[in-house]
Image (cartoon, rainbow, N blue to C red):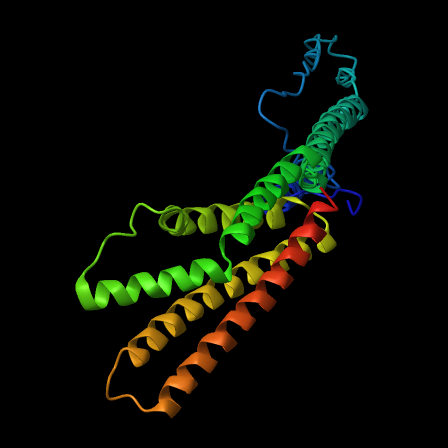
Amino acid sequence: MAFLKTGKMGNTTTLAALLLVVFALVLGACSEDGSDITLPDGVTLPEIELPETTEAPETTEAPETTEAPETTQAPQEDTSSSTEDDGDSSTLWAIGLLALVLIGLIAFFASRSGKSEQTVSVQAPPPATPTPVAWRESARSAYSESRWLYDGMDVELGVWRGDTLYEAQISNSTAAINTTHQTTWNQLPTRMSGAHDALYKLESTVGDPHIAHLATVLGDNLNSTRAALDRVADARRHRRSVEDDPAAVAGVVDEARVAESRAADELSADRHRLGDSISNLSSVI
């Protein structure tokens, strides 16, 4: 039965056991003398009625002068051939029935095996390709937030932030809270978060390695520019502190001014790279 391919080990074991049972029944039915025929439940051999033997007639008394004739026995019918024919017919019926059972089992397990193989061969559908609308919306949002940050994070904002920190340090002054620079500074965290969220979504939905790389570069330049802005503010606060310190020597003041100028140059360079990355992203939207 090598042509049967069951889907599971349990089906193979069950089929093998049933075939062994059927084989044993066939062997029993086909024994040499026909006396050990074993049939399934519900199958019976037909009963054979043997004809009764006729009795010999009573002997008649012959005259004394003659001898009595020999008694004759009634001929008996030979039933051995008919019994063998009936036995052979019953055996053929049993073998035919078992063959039908075997064919039914083969068809049943073959159909189950085909279904199992069909189920296993089914593959999951490939992931859906992201639609252009989804990643373009993320790209436009990232561009809008990044452009606002580029315009706001300049050297002037860094210098204002440094002056505000120094004035708050020496006098707890809050006079500059309502200025335009203060409003811009307060919006920086929200704008940075919105830009990064849009860039992350763009990278995960675009499906184009080149555009995903542009989004990564833009995110890195945003972080670099934001860090450079903080350095300008710290350098401005330090310069103001040194200049107002009567005990500070001329060399220390000069170093503070050089540090502030270097921080401003670094911010300008980072803003330039930020502007280039924004333009590169806008070209593919």
